[in-house]
Image 1 (spheres, helix red, strand yellow):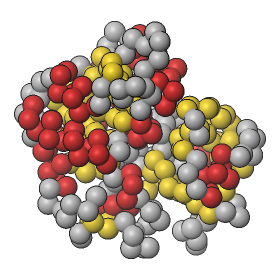
Image 2 (cartoon, helix red, strand yellow):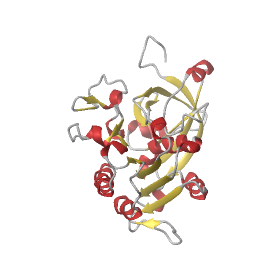
Image 3 (cartoon, rainbow, N blue to C red):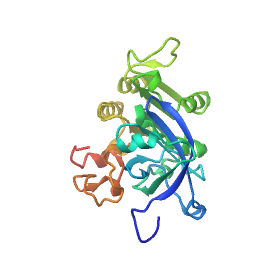
Image 4 (cartoon, one colour):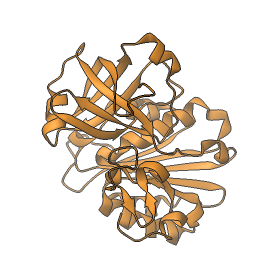
Length: 279
């Protein structure tokens, strides 16, 4: 971006497209401008606006880790005009990107702690950035547990990475699908995410929990974590569905006095408890 137009996007080449699940794709994007690529940096938890020229922009998190240099990745579901246009792109095509925006997960404050990631459906991408960031700094943390659920086996995203995390001795991965979403030979769990987390019973002492998923999953998981003894200050989430223009100028991202695009999207439950329950 230039200093004169805050809405002018970077031009990004689609270096790789991964089909994750039905209507869900991951783009690996590289800067066309080498100087812009050199100057660019972001931190885990931040997001951007991705444009299909002539159609508009859509807001997604940056799904890759800032420890992986030279590119960014985003994962999106085809759900409207812009995402339909993005989904029609091919490797080598050019799209727009502006960002990064928002705050970040304070991972340096979690050194020496256990981490519990809880994600559902297409909401794994924002936590994927944090997961890889933490795995690339593995010595900073104690136990790492990942609980991920989707409606069906076919709806799971990052299937190759799930296999990689499952194979790691330093990661405890629990994958579940909704009842009826399993297939013959499925070896994961069958059940909704909140009761799976409750049955897993992660110890709250010296542990940080990160939750991102559909609103109903978050709504039902937060009381479970509270019941298990997690204090609100140790529970983090990201308000992906509230991110809008990225700049706090369109006035559509606020909840109470907090502008998600500027003050978030990362909040602790303690912070959310002080805001109107509009999220």
